[in-house]
Structure formats: structure tokens, C-alpha cells
Image 1: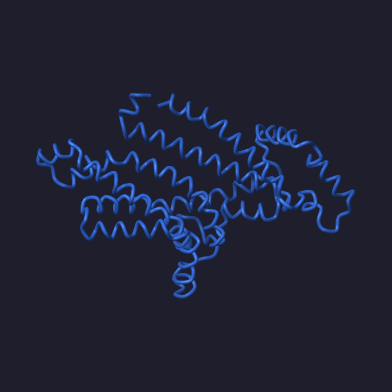
Image 2: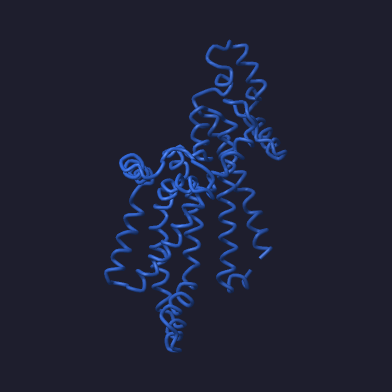
Length: 314
């Protein structure tokens, strides 16, 4: 197990370096000059040039990138051009709400997707299966922004049942739970369909396996056969999909946080890019990329937990 984790961490290093390079180069092609943004519209050219030298923007790109990597190795993500606050402090203030939103969306969407997929597989070809397939296709087809705007209009504005602007409190409080419901349903709504479809396909294959027929021949109940012998063996591809989809949730969180004014990393990234705040934008890219890599590492570890054959091969 430890060897697997170390191997994945070593493979993550070049991936993270590539992401840092791409993020750094993308911020060089934004239309606004960071020095002009910091100096303000009324600054003279001398002041702008002084700021460019202070920020190191007068150096060649490869030197700027090496300086940037050196700062990262020291744990220095820079200072925001807009509000002059340390980037790491801003990220620390926003990572908690983003994790709350992702946790709230996964708590209900993953179990529901697995349940629907299992029901569809067990009742294959009957009306529960058709409902599951239809719901899965609808969940995959509906864009996250359309679902979010529909919930805002119906439950937030029209019926006024739930708040839909900002974070109303921590997740462990009643007001916090009420405030996170609409963003969590929006973000998790696009997650249920793929999980249900993959679970249904995997459970269908497992139900036709020899060990499931043997379990039924021994007189085990259908609940024990489906849950203990079919579903557990079908979870490996489902875990793969969940891991990949959780990574994509980070991208979906950008849209959801913007719609609901949720004070998370996604909204911070959008604001930093629109305002040409290069240090802040690069800091959010680092956090989102590291989160994606960490999620894939957890998925690899779960492989070994769920399937002893993988653990023995490694």
C-alpha cells in the first residue's frame, strides 16, 4: 500500500509542474497588464515601470517562471494585486466553504446514484429500470448552470423556501444547512446520473457471475446476494468513475459558486481571472490541481482495499 502511494506521488510531480507551467503561461496572455492593474488608471508610465520591476515582469518569461517556482518551494504564493493580501491567506479563507459544498453534494448524490443503479440492475427491463435509465440520461444531459438557475427561480425566488445567495453559516448549523441545500443539490445533481449508469452496468455483470449463482444456490437472501456478493464486486469501476467525477466537481464548483455567490475557491478564481490578478489566479490553479491529484491518489488506494487481487499484484 505504501509503495503504491509513493509511486503515485512521484508520478504527480511532473503533472503538477506541467499544470504550473500552463497556468503561468495562460496568465501571460491576458489582455490587462498586472502592473497597470495595481498602479491604477491614473498612474504615470514611470510608476507602472517601477511596479513592473518590483513584480519581476521586466524579466524574460523563463526567469519569471523559475522565480515563481522558487517562491512556491518556500511556500510563498505571492500577494494579490487587487487587495494586496497574501494569496495563501485568501485561499485559506475560501477552501473551507468549497470543501463544505463538495461534501454536502457527495453525501446525497453518491448513495442515491448507487441505490438507483442497483435497483435498475435488479429489476432489469421493468418499470423501475426504465425510470432509472430515464433519470440518468436526464441527469447527464442537464447543464449544471441550467439546473442551478432553475432551482434559484423555483425554490429561492418564487416559493422563497431556501436562501440562494451566499453562505449563511457553517455546515454544522441549521442556517448553514439551509444555505447549502440549493448549491449542493445543483452540484450533486449532475453527479447522480453517471454514478447510477455505471452502477447499473457493473451490477448487471456481477449478477450474472458464477459466485452470485453459487450464493443463491446456498440459500442466501436476495438482499445478501445483491449487496454482499454483487454490489461489492461491482464497486471498482464505480469508484473509478466517482473519483474522476469528484475531480470534475472542482470545475463544476466554479459555476455553482458563481451562481449562488458562494465564497469558495471557484468564485475566487473567476474573480481573479476577470480582474487579471495573476498571483491569485495561479494560486487557485495550484489548489484545484492539487485537489484533483489527491483525489486520484485516494481512488488508487481504494482499488487495493476493494480488490485484494490488485493489492497482491502491487
